[in-house]
Image (cartoon, rainbow over all chains, first blue to last red; front, side):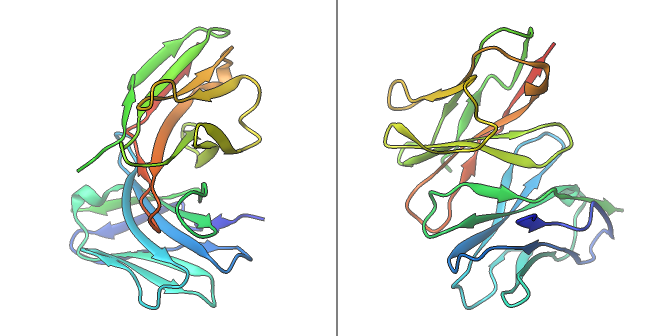
Length: 116
Length: 113
């Protein structure tokens, strides 16, 4: 079974509007971390936001917020006020266990296109 | 801001040749990783390295792959005899004891011809 599922291969959003990128995960480990990375066409992986399984509040980083619904095992990324520069691939990833030494398991990604 | 540096950014090699991909992780990080992304596909874990030894590896990381931290700053991935299917973007990453903090390098795009 897939550990990280991103069901939207591609998404379009109008500039200045908000967009939600879906991510569901599967783990039996009570301790885990969830990550979102942005990969522009140049190829690098840019860290956006992190949510720990024990965090009580949803993570926010500037225009990025993570809608964490633990019971549903979902960790959707919300980008507010989309900009043309947000056009990129977005990957959801999970690390199982405590600390930051475990490997990341990535989803297949969502390609976001921001329209002017 | 500290960053992970990878060299070269692009490498083209002939099938059967050995390649070494180089990485300089963030200096106070303790855990090092290599990931691979075949064009258009998801990022896949290859290997993690801690305290001068492999801590975990995936089934992709077979005998043709090896990693080394030769001098306390560099972290290398060697592919002994490259195959066409090794063509991919290879990412190095490092992390420390914090709850998060994986930092990825910009990647090396390897093309095997």
